[in-house]
Length: 318
Image (cartoon, rainbow, N blue to C red; front, side, top):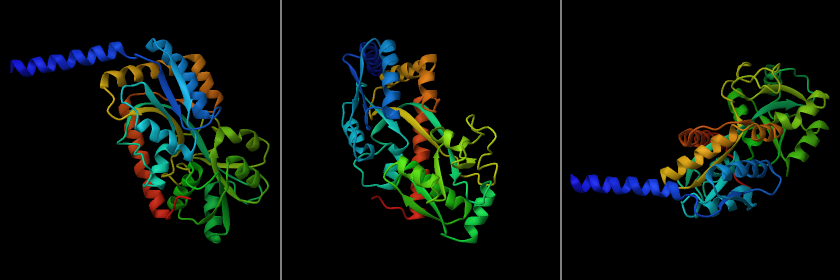
């Protein structure tokens, strides 16, 4: 018993020393997208305040490519000491659901730190389409299966999978028209070359106000603060399509709990600052925060949901 107590005490002291000596060198936040993207802006904003809280320095390293897989693989193989972090987005788990052969596992190979932000999504249609709400759209789609089209920024994107989830929940068939980017998809929707699209509401507010597209429903659990007069899909009889874009910070698996706690505390503290919240709001996002456990559960639920959608729709990676 004395030996066991001694070992436990040594382990506790080691954990405390590890937490006190962290960070021992600059922390790097790897962003799997290019400079200026939302994930990059969030990482740089948070990193600045995290450095102040932790008493060290935080740098951002952009490793773009392969829809985020290059950065994810790099971080997964990094030392789990808290000095290499990963700025993730919705595609982090969606990519794995779409392509199980990816060389990283978002659940097993990463330690969750905190959910940092969410963004509301909505279902928009071209104004010439004779629909005013989701019920109208479902009725029209059922009257001519496959006759309506929907745009997305590409195969496997959140906009693509969100619409496939809607199709499954509503029992309708719309033809997918994938584009290379968001801009091309929105341009053709506004030109009437496609009929509908799932998109982040904040990015199309001006087009909605000017009548270039019509918002028929939001994918939120409660009405979006951005468009409070528009009912949710849940209110309109399609309760299973509660989808948001989201951003988070994670670290390599095996991170000591003491370091995980310090990083989580620094993130949550940053998210309470007015200047940081303003940065997020300018990106159309709502600051989130919370425990590592909250993020871990969030990612597991997301992966499970999108695996089912991909399987049911028979979606294959490009």
